[in-house]
Length: 205
Image 1 (spheres, rainbow, N blue to C red):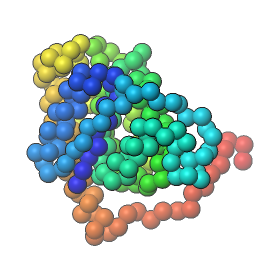
Image 2 (image 1 turned 120 degrees about the vertical axis):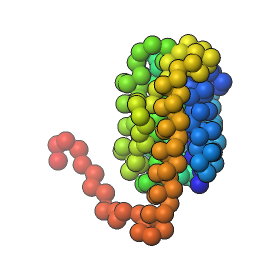
Image 3 (image 1 turned 120 degrees about the horizontal axis):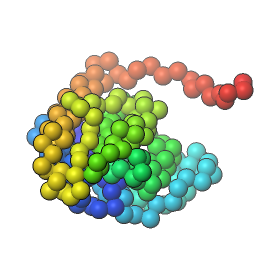
Protein backbone atom coordinates (compact mmCIF):
# COMPACT_ATOMS: atom_id res chain seq x y z
CA UNK A 1 0.00 0.00 0.00
CA UNK A 2 1.32 3.40 -0.97
CA UNK A 3 0.34 7.04 -0.75
CA UNK A 4 1.64 9.82 -2.97
CA UNK A 5 2.04 13.22 -1.31
CA UNK A 6 2.26 16.23 -3.63
CA UNK A 7 3.87 19.41 -2.31
CA UNK A 8 2.54 22.37 -4.28
CA UNK A 9 4.68 24.94 -2.47
CA UNK A 10 7.67 26.51 -4.23
CA UNK A 11 9.51 26.03 -0.93
CA UNK A 12 10.37 22.34 -0.83
CA UNK A 13 11.02 22.34 2.94
CA UNK A 14 8.57 25.03 4.08
CA UNK A 15 5.29 25.12 5.96
CA UNK A 16 3.34 22.93 3.53
CA UNK A 17 6.08 20.30 3.59
CA UNK A 18 6.08 20.35 7.38
CA UNK A 19 2.39 19.46 7.40
CA UNK A 20 2.75 16.82 4.67
CA UNK A 21 5.72 15.28 6.45
CA UNK A 22 3.64 14.81 9.60
CA UNK A 23 0.98 13.01 7.54
CA UNK A 24 3.69 10.93 5.84
CA UNK A 25 5.27 9.83 9.12
CA UNK A 26 1.88 8.79 10.49
CA UNK A 27 1.04 6.83 7.33
CA UNK A 28 4.38 5.03 7.58
CA UNK A 29 3.71 4.17 11.22
CA UNK A 30 0.41 2.65 10.13
CA UNK A 31 1.75 0.43 7.36
CA UNK A 32 1.41 2.69 4.32
CA UNK A 33 4.51 3.57 2.30
CA UNK A 34 4.80 7.16 1.13
CA UNK A 35 6.56 9.30 -1.44
CA UNK A 36 6.62 13.09 -1.41
CA UNK A 37 7.15 14.94 -4.67
CA UNK A 38 7.70 18.69 -5.01
CA UNK A 39 6.04 20.45 -7.92
CA UNK A 40 5.56 24.03 -6.74
CA UNK A 41 9.00 25.13 -7.95
CA UNK A 42 8.68 23.56 -11.43
CA UNK A 43 7.92 25.30 -14.70
CA UNK A 44 4.51 23.78 -15.48
CA UNK A 45 2.44 24.83 -18.46
CA UNK A 46 -1.31 25.12 -18.01
CA UNK A 47 -3.72 22.91 -19.95
CA UNK A 48 -4.40 24.22 -23.48
CA UNK A 49 -7.42 21.94 -24.09
CA UNK A 50 -5.83 20.42 -27.20
CA UNK A 51 -7.36 16.98 -26.55
CA UNK A 52 -4.17 15.19 -27.56
CA UNK A 53 -4.11 13.29 -24.27
CA UNK A 54 -7.32 11.50 -25.26
CA UNK A 55 -5.34 9.87 -28.08
CA UNK A 56 -1.91 9.50 -26.49
CA UNK A 57 -3.06 8.72 -22.92
CA UNK A 58 -0.57 11.30 -21.66
CA UNK A 59 -0.18 15.07 -21.78
CA UNK A 60 1.34 16.67 -24.87
CA UNK A 61 3.69 18.65 -22.59
CA UNK A 62 6.23 16.04 -21.50
CA UNK A 63 7.21 17.34 -18.07
CA UNK A 64 6.73 16.54 -14.39
CA UNK A 65 3.00 15.92 -14.97
CA UNK A 66 3.71 12.84 -17.10
CA UNK A 67 6.42 11.77 -14.66
CA UNK A 68 3.92 11.95 -11.80
CA UNK A 69 1.21 10.14 -13.77
CA UNK A 70 2.80 6.73 -13.23
CA UNK A 71 3.13 7.40 -9.49
CA UNK A 72 -0.50 8.46 -9.39
CA UNK A 73 -1.55 5.30 -11.23
CA UNK A 74 0.30 3.03 -8.80
CA UNK A 75 -0.71 4.62 -5.49
CA UNK A 76 -3.66 3.82 -3.25
CA UNK A 77 -3.99 7.34 -1.88
CA UNK A 78 -3.03 10.92 -2.74
CA UNK A 79 -2.44 13.88 -0.43
CA UNK A 80 -2.24 17.28 -2.12
CA UNK A 81 -0.65 20.09 -0.15
CA UNK A 82 -0.72 23.78 -1.00
CA UNK A 83 0.07 27.12 0.57
CA UNK A 84 -2.66 29.73 0.41
CA UNK A 85 -2.26 32.28 -2.41
CA UNK A 86 -5.00 34.93 -2.39
CA UNK A 87 -7.42 32.47 -0.75
CA UNK A 88 -6.69 29.78 -3.31
CA UNK A 89 -4.10 27.17 -4.21
CA UNK A 90 -0.70 27.93 -5.74
CA UNK A 91 -1.18 28.56 -9.49
CA UNK A 92 1.63 26.18 -10.44
CA UNK A 93 -0.05 23.42 -8.46
CA UNK A 94 -3.41 24.12 -10.09
CA UNK A 95 -1.82 23.86 -13.56
CA UNK A 96 -0.21 20.58 -12.49
CA UNK A 97 -3.46 19.13 -11.12
CA UNK A 98 -5.59 20.22 -14.08
CA UNK A 99 -3.31 18.37 -16.45
CA UNK A 100 -2.64 15.37 -14.20
CA UNK A 101 -6.29 14.61 -13.55
CA UNK A 102 -7.41 15.28 -17.12
CA UNK A 103 -4.63 13.56 -19.08
CA UNK A 104 -3.98 10.57 -16.82
CA UNK A 105 -5.37 7.40 -18.35
CA UNK A 106 -5.68 5.53 -15.04
CA UNK A 107 -9.00 4.96 -13.30
CA UNK A 108 -8.84 6.85 -10.01
CA UNK A 109 -12.02 5.23 -8.65
CA UNK A 110 -11.61 4.42 -4.96
CA UNK A 111 -8.14 5.90 -4.69
CA UNK A 112 -8.23 7.83 -1.43
CA UNK A 113 -7.71 11.60 -1.56
CA UNK A 114 -6.91 14.28 0.99
CA UNK A 115 -6.03 17.96 0.80
CA UNK A 116 -3.71 19.80 3.19
CA UNK A 117 -3.41 23.58 3.24
CA UNK A 118 -1.03 25.98 4.95
CA UNK A 119 -1.49 29.68 5.67
CA UNK A 120 -0.02 32.36 7.84
CA UNK A 121 -3.49 33.50 8.83
CA UNK A 122 -6.51 33.04 6.53
CA UNK A 123 -7.78 31.59 3.24
CA UNK A 124 -7.48 27.93 4.19
CA UNK A 125 -11.13 26.96 3.75
CA UNK A 126 -11.45 28.23 0.19
CA UNK A 127 -8.13 26.64 -0.80
CA UNK A 128 -9.22 23.37 0.82
CA UNK A 129 -12.40 23.48 -1.25
CA UNK A 130 -10.50 23.98 -4.52
CA UNK A 131 -8.26 20.97 -3.91
CA UNK A 132 -11.05 18.64 -2.83
CA UNK A 133 -12.90 19.17 -6.10
CA UNK A 134 -10.24 17.16 -7.96
CA UNK A 135 -11.14 14.13 -5.83
CA UNK A 136 -14.90 14.52 -5.88
CA UNK A 137 -15.07 14.54 -9.69
CA UNK A 138 -12.86 11.44 -9.92
CA UNK A 139 -14.69 8.85 -7.81
CA UNK A 140 -12.15 9.23 -5.00
CA UNK A 141 -13.25 8.99 -1.35
CA UNK A 142 -12.09 12.07 0.57
CA UNK A 143 -10.38 11.55 3.92
CA UNK A 144 -11.34 13.81 6.80
CA UNK A 145 -9.71 14.52 10.14
CA UNK A 146 -10.79 16.08 13.43
CA UNK A 147 -10.82 19.53 11.81
CA UNK A 148 -10.25 20.89 8.32
CA UNK A 149 -6.80 19.79 7.19
CA UNK A 150 -4.93 23.03 7.75
CA UNK A 151 -1.90 24.36 9.58
CA UNK A 152 -0.95 27.92 10.41
CA UNK A 153 2.40 29.66 10.58
CA UNK A 154 4.86 31.88 8.75
CA UNK A 155 7.78 29.46 9.11
CA UNK A 156 8.12 25.67 9.54
CA UNK A 157 8.93 26.25 13.22
CA UNK A 158 5.67 28.18 13.57
CA UNK A 159 3.78 25.26 12.04
CA UNK A 160 5.38 22.82 14.46
CA UNK A 161 4.08 25.01 17.28
CA UNK A 162 0.53 24.77 15.86
CA UNK A 163 -0.33 21.84 18.11
CA UNK A 164 -3.91 21.49 16.90
CA UNK A 165 -2.86 21.67 13.26
CA UNK A 166 -0.14 19.05 13.68
CA UNK A 167 -2.54 16.79 15.58
CA UNK A 168 -5.02 17.23 12.73
CA UNK A 169 -2.30 15.99 10.33
CA UNK A 170 -1.67 12.90 12.46
CA UNK A 171 -5.39 12.09 12.73
CA UNK A 172 -5.61 12.53 8.96
CA UNK A 173 -2.75 10.08 8.47
CA UNK A 174 -4.36 7.44 10.68
CA UNK A 175 -7.77 7.89 9.03
CA UNK A 176 -6.22 7.67 5.60
CA UNK A 177 -4.30 4.49 6.45
CA UNK A 178 -7.50 2.91 7.77
CA UNK A 179 -9.49 3.86 4.69
CA UNK A 180 -6.78 2.63 2.30
CA UNK A 181 -6.60 -0.71 4.09
CA UNK A 182 -10.40 -1.01 4.16
CA UNK A 183 -10.69 -0.32 0.44
CA UNK A 184 -7.95 -2.85 -0.37
CA UNK A 185 -9.93 -5.49 1.56
CA UNK A 186 -13.15 -4.36 -0.09
CA UNK A 187 -11.64 -4.68 -3.57
CA UNK A 188 -10.48 -8.21 -2.78
CA UNK A 189 -13.89 -9.33 -1.51
CA UNK A 190 -16.37 -7.26 -3.53
CA UNK A 191 -14.49 -5.61 -6.39
CA UNK A 192 -14.93 -2.01 -7.47
CA UNK A 193 -18.41 -0.46 -7.79
CA UNK A 194 -20.19 -1.21 -11.04
CA UNK A 195 -19.63 1.47 -13.68
CA UNK A 196 -22.25 2.78 -16.06
CA UNK A 197 -21.49 4.02 -19.55
CA UNK A 198 -20.67 7.70 -19.10
CA UNK A 199 -23.40 10.13 -20.14
CA UNK A 200 -21.86 13.37 -21.40
CA UNK A 201 -24.14 16.37 -21.87
CA UNK A 202 -24.09 20.13 -21.68
CA UNK A 203 -26.70 22.55 -20.39
CA UNK A 204 -28.62 22.89 -23.66
CA UNK A 205 -29.30 19.26 -24.48
